[in-house]
Length: 84
Image 1 (cartoon, one colour):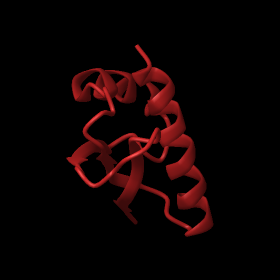
Image 2 (tube, one colour):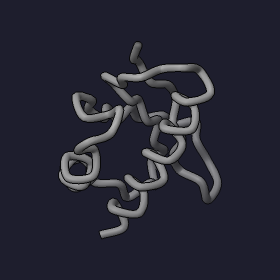
Image 3 (cartoon, one colour):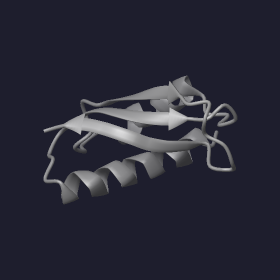
């Protein structure tokens, strides 16, 4: 159930970066996740599909990439996003 909070944080990070870089439409968001992230991709996308309506991410999707080198308590980060 924490995927809803994670999704909100991802959207906040991407929204702020999009504004700073004058990007109006986001198409893809890439998240790097560590081996102990406990992040369920299906649940994350479920929340994202609901939250992205009427935002610059309305046509976007989230793609997770496993990164076994991530250690410590923070097990994920926004690697990059694509848009125009």
